[in-house]
Amino acid sequence: MSGIVVLTGGVGGAKLVLGLIHAVDPARVTAIVNTGDDFRHLGLHISPDIDTLLYTLSGKANAAQGWGREGESWAFLSALKELGGEDWFQLGDMDVALHVLRTAMLARGESLTAITAHVAGRWGIGAKILPMSNDSVATMIESDEGLLEFQRYFVEKRCAPAVRGVRFDGAEASVPAPGVVEAILAADAVLIAPSNPWFSVDPLLAVPSIHVALTQTRAPVVAVSPLIGGQAVKGPTAKLMGELGLAVNNDSIALHYGDLLDGFLIDSGDACNVPGLTIDHIATLMNTLDDKVRVAKAALTLAARLA
Image (cartoon, rainbow, N blue to C red):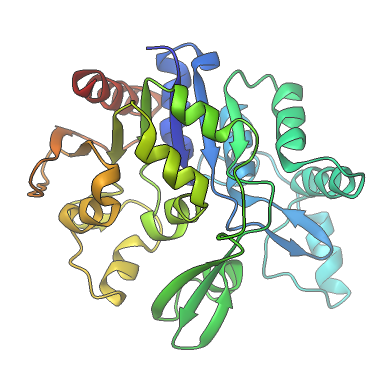
């Protein structure tokens, strides 16, 4: 295989991408990352999922929590709180440096794509990390507490409000970032990471030209399930599915992706009964680097078989 594309959100997807760059030449891997979570906070442009990929692939991530930087300090946040500033979104001192740089570069007219490539290059990341779009797309949560920006729902309210629907403001008018469609059309395999389908993958699919490219690519499209035994490894996927009236199982996820999907990698103890879909089983929990490599190789093996 030459080109491998991964559609990904943050923590769960970053694990798969990390496995991939240890399983194959990193230069063959293109991660197309959700930016529906991006937002402005304290005047700074924050790209949580892109940052998680950058930190994880450069070896700078906080391994225990899966997000943020290892060895982080919190003097900025402490001083902010002392002044009465909003401290619900955790901004570590080293993390702030990345947000300040990104915001300054955007103000100079540089694109999110170029800024992400700059940081990846500074940190020696061999894979290509592309934002899904340089346009603004905002994931909005329709909840029993009203309409919420994603980070207000996810971080400030800790996913407590019941979700009634999810929408992606700006998606219909957005265009993919340079290189996104080309990577999908030229790929030998397209993987959908075990990220939350509704919060992390749907924003990518809501960009019209990305959805079209996925229907046109000759590459097999293989998803890795975010569920193990009917539970999400991390995050609110299972809670969300229940609130949307869906059975918390792999059938619901496969049907959600629909005709885009050719293959589905699920946990050894789980099932999926959607007709016409090629299913492989493997232990999908990714704790160690060996786990991540093993799951990445299994997804590539399934894709190669489908090709």
